[in-house]
Length: 527
Image (cartoon, rainbow, N blue to C red; front, side, top):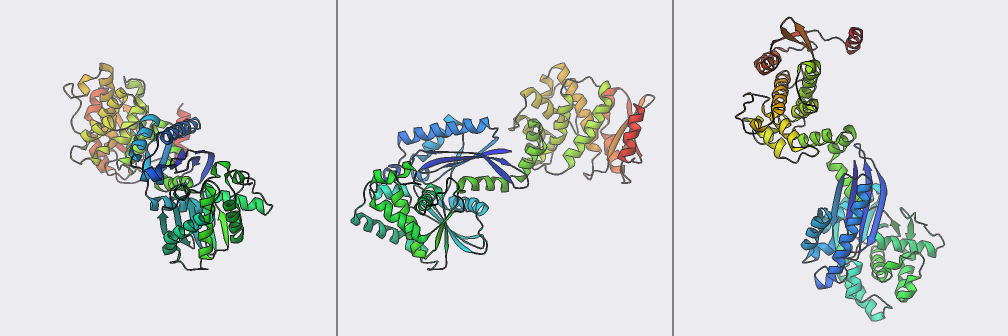
């Protein structure tokens, strides 16, 4: 399965495209980032500007196109501080849904922190240490304390670089008075949290987000070791970060833009980021800042994998998207056992051996298989007369990849897998064309017997072979020594419809099951 994880941040919109494996592994295939600056003037005014929303819509539309060209099947998109706080954030989310076709979930700060932690834990070894993860965004800063890899506590504070830059007018050269005011503000907001952890306990701070990565990059250039894009796990000392803070706060905007390692688009934001990072490191007495290039969007991918292992495995197992959608539909409605697959296997064996005698439409074999897999999904609504509920769910549910007439045939086949036989007066069945009615009647007749042959839901009947003896059909059942009397009793009760379709009597007998290799040689010799 391929997934696109999108982080609609206060400064930038990020996307990663990843190939997922059922065992939890994934490979990042592509990354995209655009600095949209949704938070610009938003945090002060309380509303997203029209320009910012339009830029966000354009970026998300481009990202969706890029992802779909790479075969992405699922999108996971979240929005953070800027959208979360804006009084028109809901309008923006609705526009994204209407104009781009993406559902964006606005997440609270604690959920943002949890997802960031998941991404960092995958990229940085957090074992055997007490570590603080710091993600500095445009509207908020997330602080995550970990001990021996486990997340202990998380805080989300409204101290993002866009918020601080606008509040303290940090765009150009900074006065001493402004710096003092900023320091006092940071102390007021951060000390109640940082003081809980004590000084000297945390030796390592891990920094995520563009601001923190820029700080590490600048420090690397200053020491003569430019990271050249390979920033993950690069460590710089607390003294080096303090040096970067002094350098950027003394420079004006133009001078900052020429600093090596700094993204020019962050020239007006880096002062707030440097002061914030340095304050945290100094207050904790930490020794180093370590860069981590994985954060929220990678955390989204990992969270998706953790909650969708079955669906990812199905994507790898079923190359046919219709079979994959049927498997997911059944699982979503609670049909996760083996009964549906067992009935489908028996039904297809009967179909293949009787096909020459069946006057059915092209595609009937697939319809039979899908109806067998889904025949019991009606239990999701209720057990009494569940076959009617199955018909409703198949025809009215969100089962993708099928035409409406196909869903009607599949749904009716499932509907008639027990109790009453099809009648032209029945709603749905009576409106079908003659060939469609004949097909439904035939497929339902086969499905009835196949379902009866797994009456106990224990897979007692392993093989079924059709043998003609005069004017009778004998269904020979191999059961590996298991008692199949209950299955035979139930199948006999349901055989009437197939007897009408074929115009002959049907009986059942148990035969010893031959080893598969012997059976294969016998079949080859018969041909």
